[in-house]
Image 1 (tube, rainbow, N blue to C red):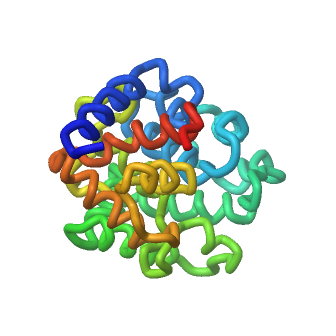
Image 2: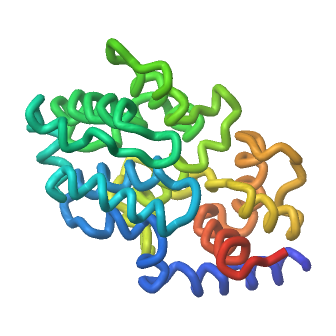
Length: 253
C-alpha cells in the first residue's frame, strides 16, 4: 500500500474508533467518570497503570479502587489518614497489590500537596517525552521507604521499556480535538507524543511496514512514531486508534 493510500486508510480507521462509542469498553471510560481535572488525572493514571490483561477486568478493578476512595479520588488522596487505609487493604490487580497501592497514594499525596496538576510531574524534566518519562520515574520513586516490588509498576525508557501504559496516559491527557482523549494538559504538544506499543499494535504496524524492529521496546516505539509522523506530523499518535482497532477489535493479521 503506497503512502497516500495508507494515510487515507488509517485516517478512516481513526475516524471510526475515535468516537464516543469507543469509550464504554475501554479503560479510558474510567477517567470519563469525572469532570474535575485532578479526578480525571488520578483516575486516568490508575486505569493506565492497570492496563494490562483483559479490558473488562481492567475497568472492573479500576472501579473497585475508586469505590474504595468514595469515588472522590482527589479529595481522598489529599485528605486520607491512617483510619482510611484499611478499606484499601486486599486490593489486587494481577501483580499490583495493596503494598504498591499505599506507595502510589503516598506519592500522589506528596505531589498534589504542592501542585495543582500531575502534568508538571512529567514536564519539569525536559522537552522530549523520553526525558519526561525518565524524569517522572525518578521523581515517583524519590520518597523514602520505597517497596522494592513497586518499582516494576512505573516503566522508564532507561530500561528500554515501551512505556506503553504511560504513553497511553499521556495520550489521554494531551491529545486535542478528540472524542475520547481529554486534552486537559497544555504544556505537551500532541506532536511530541510517543505511540503506545504492545504486541497487538506492533503486529499490525509490522504488517503495514511501519515497524521493522523485532524487539517490542522503547526503540520500537520511537521507530513506529517516526513513521506515523510522516502521516500526520502534528498528531501522530491519533493513529494508535487505527492500530489498536485493527489489532484488538478487528483481529487484523
